[in-house]
Image (cartoon, rainbow, N blue to C red):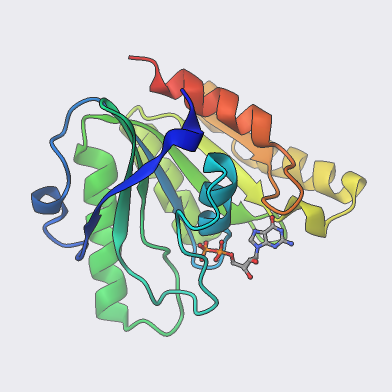
Length: 200
Ligand code: GDP
């Protein structure tokens, strides 16, 4: 699959009633999830080699749209809203969380979830929740440790190994890789995994 061919398909304005806004539940969908500011937009832009595909925002949590990008007729990337943004009211937060959980648990075409976490502070509660939901639904997870360029090689590998150890109970269902949108670290590895998920 040529991820550079990704193009914007639709935005779902509201996480509630998500199923009403999304394309039909067929083909292959790969979702990207992560805390606000984890580097999700930058990663999507890097993987698709399109600078403006997903907006990188300096005000985390502001855009709460779900954006769907089409790779080809049968395959889509879904950019889920960033979670864990402090300034969002608790009730709204709970609503998102519930809707995200529902999406992960009920979307049949969902073939993989990329959970992006800043390598300097991974595995927060909501990250674990996302990973658990996906695994419980038999959906493979790629835990991407973003901004890997912020750590020196040794510290980076130490963190990767710690996270792998922490997630080892999930077995092969959860992969852990370092990533940097800035330096291209991990890119070919990630594209290889996404390509696997894209197979029917
Ligand atoms: P999002 O909220 O998850 O979509 O995160 P963004 O992609 O908007 O990135 C949040 C911030 O982290 C921005 O200031 C980016 O420039 C920065 N950032 C994202 N990826 C990287 C990376 O690989 N390396 C470094 N050093 N900074 C990054």
